[in-house]
Length: 175
Image (cartoon, rainbow, N blue to C red):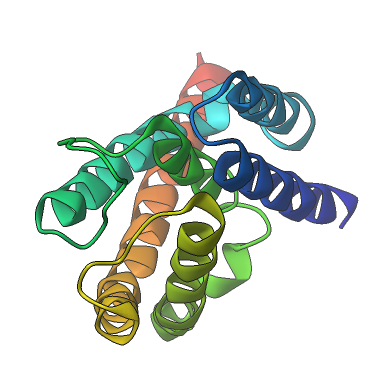
């Protein structure tokens, strides 16, 4: 239980750093947070593939939404800022830990994604000064629909990579 609580606290701390610091040197704190996660809560061997996959897939999704006009960061850009991309890395660190309870049945993840992700994006946008050109309610509805699918899919990545890691451990023990 202490590791689950630590995982949740590390995620929240990282979220605050990202949305308040923007693309500043304070983002190095996220590297420290992920380092603590990998040293105390999990390991690179167990979760490295998951962290990288969610970081890349989530950054691509949010960059796609940016190019559709869902976000406005106040400057012309095709890719999301680093602080927003790092939020995906932080989220990935919770899937096997403090958010593991949402993996089964699938509708838990769907419900949590549909409710909490729009609130997180809205809060982050307000703090970081990100405009939502489509309007608040339409944007929140878009996020709810997307995240009702995204969070269960991310749990699918986590399950797949967990199984691969466990198989590699079994293979090492048998040789």
